[in-house]
Length: 258
Image (cartoon, helix red, strand yellow):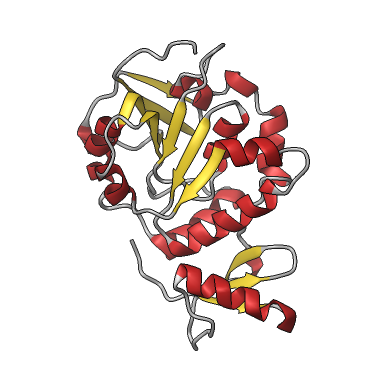
């Protein structure tokens, strides 16, 4: 993973104390340097990441209340979605899930909204700070805050180190390692350009699979672009595919209704 120095900057003087607390928590600087590519900006509304040399890309932030993620929760197809089928969601079954490569938390949020209890691992302090900010705001929301607090939590972990400490801890371990994207849509271009520059690809992704198989009780689910090879060159038990990507599912035991 790339190690990039990114400062947290308060957008107004009254937010400076809060910015300092965030900088201490995530071990990030409070002062930008000449030539910095990124900046975390603390505004009254949220914490957001901007790519300073490409302002037209806009800010990257985590928002579980509005926008595409909220639309997906309301109208995305519920338990009929491929991701729900991949993790084994069915009537009476709400598996516990460890999302070991959480990113912006979108898939984890969808699974939590469908009834799973999801723990997220995120190793980048910058991405973890964004995730934590989004969670904090969602936890306070009168509509989704209660179940969000119960079902979706974050741990700032390197996935390899975190998984190595676990054995049969969650029903499902979910992996979505960074992989170079070929698509050229505006949405993918914005976030993938930012993320590829920020955290790079995951050259150690193959190491995740055996650790995930040890940590999972029921199955491991790996999200991959359609053109990508199997993680660790291990053929899955089954695959679920869409135009955008596929889910490689490594089944170890049946998921029973609770």
